[in-house]
Length: 326
Image (cartoon, rainbow, N blue to C red; front, side):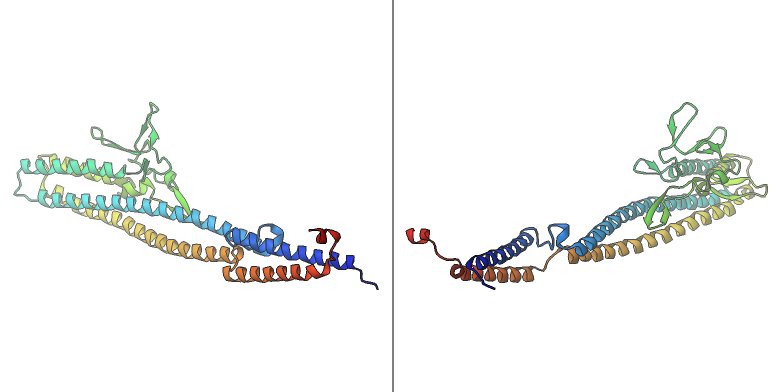
């Protein structure tokens, strides 16, 4: 077939435009933080991997935030148990002193005053808060409403009557069952939840007597106070509280151990999510980022081809009268 100059020119301009378009793509990649693609059609597979990595990074970020929140709660809960343990130890010291027959009723009254302060502090510890939330309040983290509609702390104690309540319910009877699952949890992984604290009744009730009635920390301290404050109490009457306080201490220490296990698990999760974050960032980079050195090299090659095409085109395109007139 006959090849005309017009055919040569059309082929030349088509190839020149393709080379220029390729240079434009490379220039766009270099000016857009070396991204492999500017449109979905540029690299659909890389885009899919990029979106998957971005979704995973968002998920990991959410779990990392939840783990930090849980760790903060664990610190507060453990602090509360440490304080309870110290209060029980001080009460044990008071019992050991008060069980001495050489003490006068006045001496025991002084010890009773101390135990009363320990009782009130125990109530304050049970009503500890993390920020504005009661850590042992179950779902009522902001407190519960009393008969007048006022928000009050989860645990209440009436020193005159000895009534000890949790979220408005008396702890004189076994009320643990309705609150069995009454504890705030948080997502720390896929289908993995962790309680942020303990059920309030589990914290306050350290055992049950022979009749099945619950024995509470506040009730124990109040009974000890009344016994020490009673001038008719003997050393044996006071000495019996040693076993009760030791049982209460074992109860608190068992929950402290549980918190330690949760804290260790949170530390492991924190390390895992930090590692996952690095992996997904690398996955995202591999899917999105072009190699800078390779990108520059390809651009220089395209630029060389473009200049060579322009040079060869000067021989293909025939001169016109206008070229001579210039």
